[in-house]
Length: 403
Image 1 (cartoon, one colour):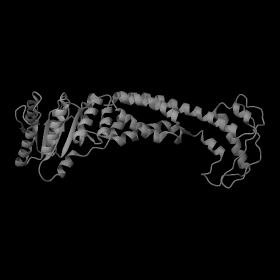
Image 2 (cartoon, rainbow, N blue to C red; image 1 turned 45 degrees about the vertical axis):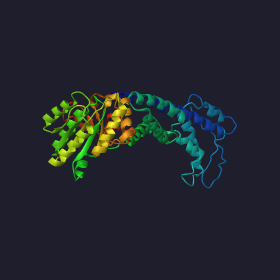
Image 3 (cartoon, helix red, strand yellow; image 1 turned 180 degrees about the vertical axis):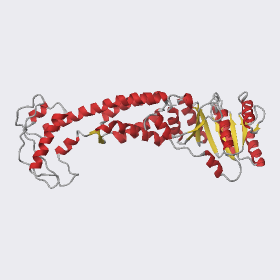
Image 4 (cartoon, one colour; image 1 turned 135 degrees about the vertical axis):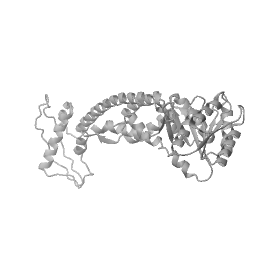
């Protein structure tokens, strides 16, 4: 998961290093401009071929309770000749040396003179709005190409803009600051998952009811079987409710999983009321002391309105303790739109993403996390009952190379 996304991010941050060069160039230009503004009109011989000469400095330091402002005086013409950081630093050293000879120092650190601020230009930097817009335009395309929804990209942009634009940072830390701001924004979106086993144990009376929903082909039925296997490993009993009475062979598929795992399947004929099947399964669990009821549901897309109305009825009848949305991570924006529809209709408590083992992009996880504002519980990573990996936001950051 995230292999393609990580590779593209790596290339992006190589481009990002060029940003440092652009910011450096802009700072030198600004420094030259400041030098001109703070010098007198009297000319001296220009610096030639990087062979520096002693620069005369006027003796008229302006006294102040909080700062000193040494007058460089006669270097306007030389300022025009400054072409690199080394020469500017030489000028600064000359000023500092003269200041020390006169024992003139700032009274308080927070009151910086012009030349103190000038020197800082070469150890720190600011990312201006124009440069931020330029690099984020490339990052935006990268995110969109890797199934990150536009609304999420806008959120990431707002976060990064607040953290980066015109904030002073050390020059050699600029790339890390950009990475960290992206990482922090993603971690704000991805809510850490709760422990499913602990949540089930918290309910003391009656069976714990989990309702699964999602579009046909998303791996919903297989995911239910994986959850049942996880419960068995934790010494918890469960029963299946075959609530998908619409799709051909759906009941037989669930019954096969039940046979493999030794779990009872409550079912009726095709075309039966799914809510009635789920209700029967809950009654069976109560009468047999079974801890968890796992309810499968239909997922037809071509009758979306009827499907959502059917799901709302099942929710009313069963009053589930947990509503889990199941989606294929490789479907990208389709999965995000499905999550939004279900969440708006009756609420999503958590998500399980299937086929994560073949998803090279990975942006679906970020998008669904943002759209639903609910945690992703697990990632399906194969066809075996044990191929269920607990979701970890921190692992996503590692997989993206942002750690």
